[in-house]
Length: 238
Image 1 (cartoon, one colour):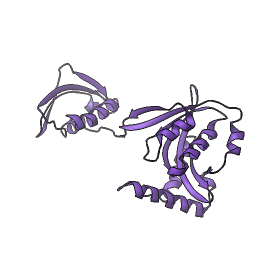
Image 2 (cartoon, one colour):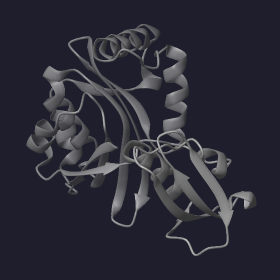
Image 3 (cartoon, rainbow, N blue to C red):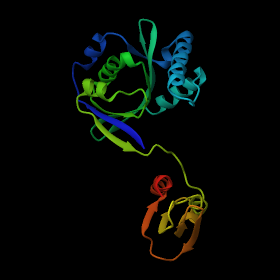
Image 4 (cartoon, rainbow, N blue to C red):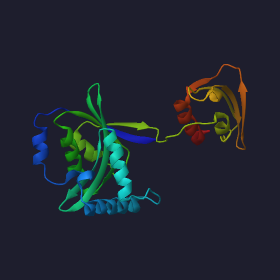
């Protein structure tokens, strides 16, 4: 599961002024950075990731160049926080006009711990003039208490972290195992691959899984996204 933090920023007429008055660090759009600043941002990101993880996607200038284009295509941006000529944060977000105003999704945030509160304040001020609902995706560099300090009300929820698409449901089911002998009958609905639109009777134990196509009434009926979420959850608890 992936934790996400959601905050509501009320519209403030003075938002732009507050953003201008806010002391550093300030966010700078990736496209406006110099080559040297981009290289510093890349080095900063990799240093943070290396200190926290054993395995991670290695950042390069080209990596962030592509990411900046992707964010811009989704009405967002890739921004770098600079304080006293030092990089203290890299953050990318997407936005769209929702039913209740601007909806912002921050999809990556690499933040220096000592500057987290200031960075959250800057994030808040970015959207204070128009109001926004901001959702921060889980990151090892997010601080829940700092979020509460800046935004007040913070809603926390869990979402599946996987992004997957089932191609062959029967073969995927056959990879399952269970500590104890278990049986269940499920129906899968796939609007793209007709061969997946079937009902399956599953018998599994610690050694394997037998999957049969049946005409029985299913105990569970799921579309493909629900099925993917279900099977990865069951792989942990069967």
